Length: 552
Image (cartoon, rainbow, N blue to C red; front, side, top):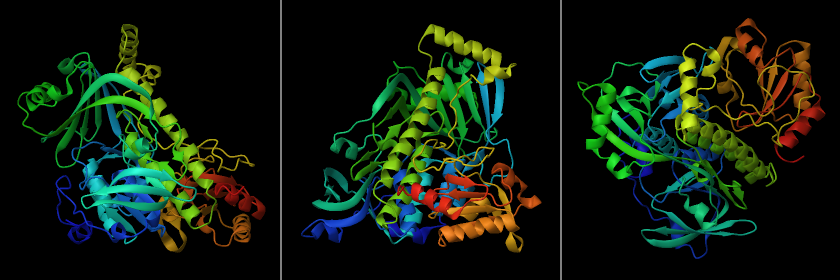
């Protein structure tokens, strides 16, 4: 089928795992000289699709190349965090993902056959989105592809494999293989979103470095009706799988994801055979439970990243730039945040609203976030898979204590689950000049809250912020708030303004932002805080905007 056909079948049930897209010869292939495009994205997975959609919504034309002609198969990434859902809301497909996905907040941890504690990832009220949904990656890619099909500025070219990259001062030149032969494209910028085995990374002579953990895990997608709640269940050393760990998650369509630790000596090909998977599943569920295997894979833990995410005109995002072990759901979620960070900066540079140096901040900010994810992933992996007898004794002692002692629970690590990085020290942040409390520091992602707005309208703060533009959040009414609003207009009358009255209905927003009458937060297009004031002067706002666009 053609990608545009997706728009016409929306609403009908589709098996996204079986879709294949037609190769279509493009006029660029017959051009005498390479045709130039502002942005070429390589890789049509969740990260590449999200980046292309974000750019197209900002009126930037995108060519998206993929060396295959289908979406992913199997569950692969399944846990999509609250922040990713908020990004998908801006991309126009968040509602579909939440409606289809299995929402959950609660996790349970077991040691042998006894629950030692449970946790709630979203213990506070006042957020539109859940802490996580479980949704198979092929649904996420399918919904993103349908959204991309509705945007005329996105040109997806299937079976277009990048086989060469030449860097020039003002563009990159790509050599591309297709079923009709080879051709070349010029790109103002190339975004490499082509996964852990990135061909673009190899073509420019780069590699990801880090640590590969000597352990293997089996993923089994099992279809069955099981009377268990939508929670994350994690076992350490259970009776049904001794000396190893097991993770269980509910997915849509009565599909359950089970991860079995196997050990380093396990043969991946043997472990993927149904006759070896079925006994493991029966040991967990019981002999009488009816189920069928839908998909299986074996993976190895690795925590890796490139030294730098920017190389001239080529920028890396998602697994092509960094990789982590699956526990903690940090892979796909951090990749979506890479795309969100990169999109507004590419758009600003291509519109000549910011210098090329703004793209350097993409690399520094997302390298910082990758280090945070790798650090948490490494700690989880070391706890889940101890590599010495002393480490195992320590872990088991912590687990035994955790049932009754809160301090021990803080040491248990079955995968610290993904949260967005607070970009402390970003060159785009303006340091506070006023005293503030709370977590909304420069570099933090804006927190959601319910809002009561002018005209009796209600809504959610992040929905009102939208995206793709700098926004000034002004709290309160009266002279202090009006003075702040006048300062914003004098600084930049095109700056988007969202007014939040300090009424009782907005108390949660005021609390989360430590707001007083006249308080102003300056938010980037990706909804990160870049400056805040109690009573800003126009010059301070102008300086903060310049700094956030790398003009300072």
